[in-house]
Image (tube, rainbow, N blue to C red):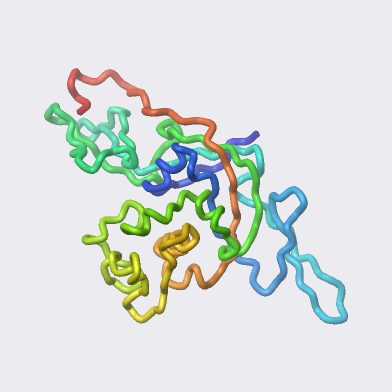
Length: 253
């Protein structure tokens, strides 16, 4: 067992991991093995890159191992969070953005204290509340994802009946065409910018395709890249991080 690198999580992914509905993740293979054939290794922890030329023996160019870990390794999750501050100094307490209700103001009660929002990339290991153990690793094309896989990615078709996960449809716009995201939902899912992008919002796979392109940009789904598929389970979860210092009474909301 080895604790590998951290994994930055989106706010919508966190509750799905905590409730056990997200047990898979797809991550881009870098660099992409263009112009070659991929042969998965028997241990499922990587692949060989080979080329075939007429009249010549198959040539192996090398073995690529998954940089995110192998079965039995552990990952710790990074989240967007709020850090309690007193002036410019941190008190060590945090709140997790994924667990805050929409009405949460984030304002401590005592003057001089304030919450600073921090992106997931800045979360230190000791603030992490999520530890995952990798169950299996494989490599495949992005579009090979099945409906069951998309559900295991935490996608629920019902989310796309009302809009992408965690998105305010009235206030946000599509990364592709600039139109309100509500125009992509239900029976009007064609991207209005002339890109011709359309998703099937009635399936989890369609929802995953939408989510992938919103994250990775125009054409990311149709490019059908090679991806690492990690299956995992949650083995560690702290409901909250204990304060690292004794705060004045009433400092926390």
